[in-house]
Length: 347
Image (tube, rainbow, N blue to C red; front, side, top):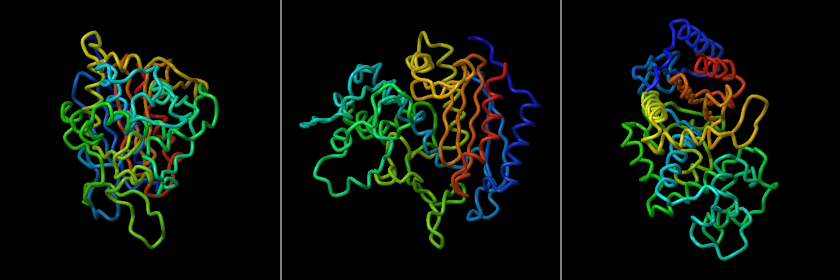
């Protein structure tokens, strides 16, 4: 197994400074950065408080965060890879082949598993499951009947594709997505990762207050569509800790280095092949965003989370914040995320 490139003290100092700056500027109540290599061992940086509702509790490696769209790469993507290895899914087959029978025209059901993973399906970008309330057909059929927004092939980030993938995984395994994910995480040693909702506690990071004067979202999925699905969906709904994300990253990087013998390692290698351009310097692989000439794979979560992997140098970094506490946080998080990507990619 090739030697990993360790992070340096100066790397840690820069990351701590950026995390402190995010919190000091009001960008997030607090946060955690955990980073390390596939060789084992990691470092934890923290700043701020979990949230005002949690008193003087400081975030740490065991704080539970709503990881939002990291669900795509922490739950759905590895489960799809396992189902492919078992012959239960086919990357080039339409998703309708892996769902209960649809006895109607279903243009969105013709999108392939590969297209859904790579966000090149052409499906409707708007995902409003509340619009299906009271409908007389099951969710998978209603979604598959929808017309396409555009012809497949162009990159457009679409949550509904991952909702369909989650429904397909449940159908081909004849098990709930909750049970499938729980088995996956237990096998890796991710003992705190779970689909929400979870009980409110000082070590659970609250997210956004949707309406002034009402209770803040706390322990329930921030994503409305995940909430309508009971918190269990292919695109969002998972809660995890910095420690568990470190365990997951080490698992993936170790498997990648030994991919001749590990299906998940082979799946990660296959997922680093570009499927569509996002912008100059960034491509979409299967689920993951690819940077640094495809050497670094990463993904963000809307609530303020990110996960970065560089199989070539063996480095990983996980960012856990509840920056959504103060509303949409993409711009506020940009400096820290840019530094996290640069630091993970450095050789």
